[in-house]
Structures are given as C-alpha cells and as structure tokens.
Image (cartoon, rainbow, N blue to C red):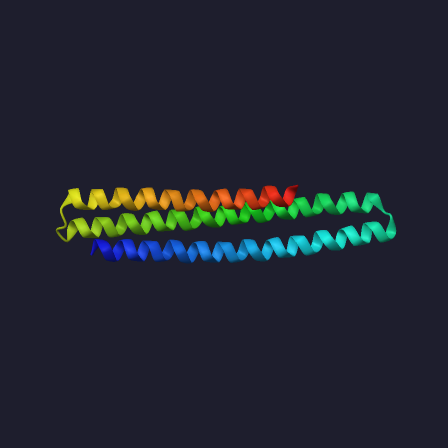
Amino acid sequence: MSVWFVWVSGSLIILASAGLGAMLWRLNREIGDVAAELNRIAISRSDLALLRKQRVRLKGWQSDAEQSVDGAVQGIEIMHFLIARVLFSLFERLGTPRGKTFLIRQVQDRTSYKVYAALRSANKAVGKGLRH
C-alpha cells in the first residue's frame, strides 16, 4: 500500500507541476505580448508618460500573477500534506507498523518539500525575469 501512496502522491505532484507550468507559460506569453504592444504604442506616439503608467500597470499584473501562482502552490501543498496525513493515519489503523509509516512519511515529506520549493523558485525566477 505504501508504494501505491507514493505513486499517487508523485502523480498529484506531477499534475500540479504541469498545471502550474502551463499557467506560468501562458501568463509569460500574455505579459510579453502586452509589453511588446506597449512599446509599439509608446514609440509611435512618443508618449513617455503613457509608457511609464503602462509599465507600472504591467508590473502590477506580473506581481499579481506571481502571488496567485504562489498562493496556488501553497494551497496544493497544504491539501497534499493533509491527504498524506489522513492516508498515513489510515495505514497505521489498518495495522501497518508505525516505524514503516514513519520512514515512508519522511521520504514523502522530503520529496514533497523539494518539489514545492522548486515550484516556488521557478515562479520567483519567472517573475524576476519579467520585472527586468
């Protein structure tokens, strides 16, 4: 049963990562398109004041997107750990030795922590790249 749980946990993490990656890719494209359009407008009109306002607005959108992705990662992480806690409690109630579940839980927690840390790091890197 522990292999099943690790497999399901890994699958959930991969699905969440893929969804977040797709969302980040789409946001990156949209922000890039908006930035390119703003540059064309500013150059054609020579309206630097408009360009400044739009850049501030764009940075606000980028910041909102970065915070949204971070919030989504945090929400998924919390759900994942709650589900894991319930499943490990179930395993123990069904008679799985506590030592085995403890070791498996440690591996699962470490792996999950690294995956969610990587997602947060990628989100910050994309955000930093878009800000500059």
